[in-house]
Image (cartoon, rainbow, N blue to C red; front, side, top):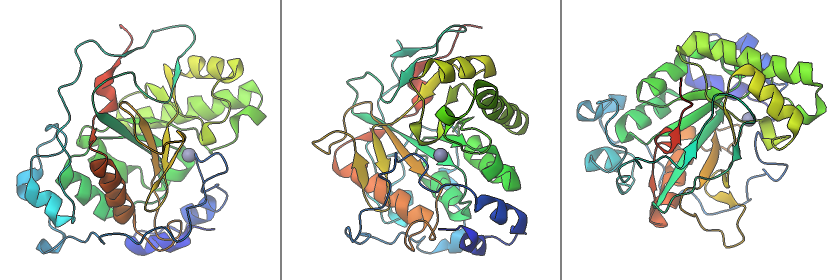
Length: 304
Ligand SMILES: [Zn+2]
């Protein structure tokens, strides 16, 4: 599967980046089970902005506003029912990070709040409609970005960051980390850390290994420690095209679950767009009665 079709959505010259991207696995975090379920239900709604010709809704542009729920018109524009607003962030954060030592590995957050957290990985698809969608809906996300996949357009992610969404570390070339010697692990993490810090003005606090591979090995933990991130973040559900793969046998979201999704376009999504995939993700969350909270609101950073 290649990625060259996605450049239709933008007018920039993509040739070099598209060629480079041919080398990357597309099933980033799916542990080999990432093939989309064939023939699952058609998208219930094909979200297309209704009217306005792509102009963002002026009333929905306040950065840092409480996630979700407020602007019914914005949700209707994307053919969605509003998610319930997330509860106030806990004063006592369930995850407390330390400045030194072994970094914790987690795939969910201990909470009784009926919230889940959305993470979006790699950065291949750079669909301007997705920026418009998040600007409208204010759903919080966390982005784990891979340098060689985003370096052809670091700027794409800046308006997403300006909405309050943090950018985190996902290596330089998206390798299978457990197959690398420690010095190579370190260069993968430390060089992504340096590039993302320079581009986005803030150092990633979290790291996600490609495919989740090696997360619980002492070697990778040590490599992460030496590059700056203070936690390794995995996931409980993986968004495909219209539905999620669940690790839990009952196929239900649980409070505090972390969901993995990807910046993917029609080439990877059997013709569906990034915004259609994301709308289906929100619909799956909404129909189970959850809201989406900001992961950072449940994490206490290390004391400086
Ligand atoms: Zn990935």
